[in-house]
Amino acid sequence: MIALDVLGVRVELPANTPLVLLREREGARRLLPILIGTSEASAIHTAMEGITPPRPLTHDLLAAVVESSGAHVEHVVVTEVIEHTYYAELHLRRASGEAAVVSCRPSDSIALAVRVGCPIYATDSLLDEAGVPAEEDADDAVEAEDPDRILDEFRDFLDDLRPEDFE
Image (cartoon, rainbow, N blue to C red; front, top):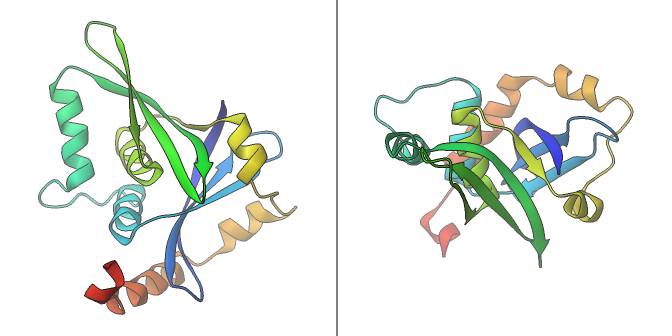
């Protein structure tokens, strides 16, 4: 498994599709862009910004349920991509010490991982298949990017959503 960092949530133009951008922590530092839903993009972004909603949102609720059951999320793994659909697993540890693995969408697992502070991994084979080589100055480009501009783009995307977009 290869450790990943969440670089952030972005809007892919011209389709106005949100994506989460992950990067290999060490080594080649390949990028793994995954198209996600609007609500999941918002959930990841708010957690990364440390914004606490007045009432728990879905991923906050899931974190609370896992914790109240005496378990904890050890890590998440983005496992594979099949016909442009990504798959992931939540790796849980119950209070008894027993391990449990739950299949899930990467967007949900990432939103949960950001909330509980657990590691995010990808399989070697997934990064070999879907990883995008990082540019030499990718670190500088990510750090120099204006977060307000990204947030404005995401808000514009949300403003343009219509019910028909979900059919």
